[in-house]
Length: 591
Image (cartoon, rainbow, N blue to C red; front, side):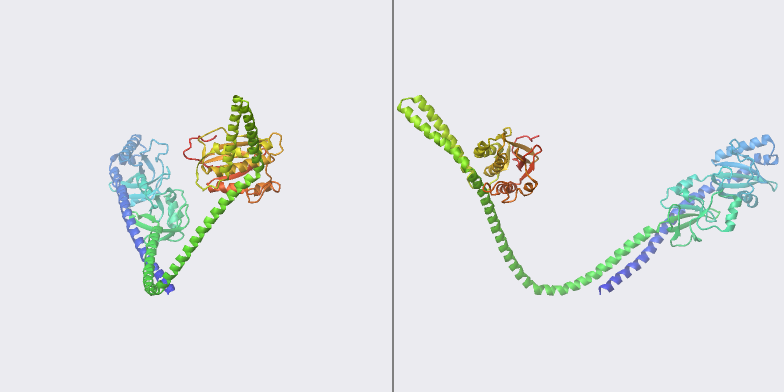
């Protein structure tokens, strides 16, 4: 069924193409003939403009007098001046006088180096036609100047005796310019089918078909087109009245089909020819036939669709109830899956928060010895100062007792700060990102790692204070990342004589980068590749679980930031924590 419909659509398209192509060719022919009619009228008017002028010039006695006495200087001068005046007045190329034997005796160009005077033109057809028929018409290339033109010749008689012929040469430059403005090639061909004027100079002096031997011989005798070789545009005879396309090879083009439209012009068997392009008609016919074929296909498809739709409507009614049941079951299943997914997400969030909190406690556990030492010193000093103050009070040494009490107050404040920071660091926070001051986070992290710094004897270099330098995160978790990075840096430089840890902060676009660089041995390729993997550590057994950096990167990424590491150019490792900058911060970008 589908194959039969396809074949029917192809048949409709083919028949439509044949009909439409013929219609467009006929339309193109009518348009071309209208254009050719206008050009033919213009050409005939140009040719007829000077048709009677040679006969009028022949009536002047000055020319007849010279033919009676061709060697009389006075008569020769008068004839030359008369022809020159006539040429200028009529605005023709040249006017000249030929005696009965074909020898030019006077000419309007008698002053010029290439004057016609003295040249024999008895072989020219216009000379013979003027003698035999009374008026000669001829188009050809001048044998003296090499310039083409239209020649008109009329006889000079006295008492029925033929004295000579007066000739005008008219150039058709205006007509050639009109031809050049055409979109399609335009040709003016003579009675032998030879192109002597065209819209393109490359088409001049070519024949529509191979020339017969007598025609070629006659062209050689009359030298109508000089020494120009006449090459054919087609390899077989061309009928200009043939309606269909013809295959022609124009100069510079491959052989292709052309629509040949011709219209007779003038009285010498000339024709003006337009070489149209059938591709436009073929393309239009193809497009329209394709539309008709598609319309037929659409109509057939619509009929088939309606029939199919009628069959399917009943099937849809049968499966509608079953489908609704399946949709309801699937909806319930998806609802349960969504609930499970939300539950899984909650478990993951709790697990991540527990891992972060475990990381904090692990860090505090690793630093417990140093923190105990940090607290024991003030407590021992407090006991000593309290005993001294009591002894001084017993001896009424009140000023000295007051000094001891002031020192006790300072030690209590210091101990309170350490305990508060440890409590804040160890507290389990609810994730609420907010602006965090970078300087305060660095200060609190330094306070926590201070015992380890004293153990290693390291010097920590911090960036210049900038109170408005903030990031969007949570203070406790930023401090947790910094504590991990600072402690790793201090551990990497353990045993060095003058260890230096450098903290820097800079703004890059919408991010603020905190870098911690140590001057230790740096990272090996293996350590660099696995550094952020859980449970990977370069420390000796018992000094770390390998979770600190993995947790730190997870925290950074949860705020839309990153945590990266590289080996610094001057040695050591450099960790870079990038977090979103607070949009309300007035701190200028770091350079």
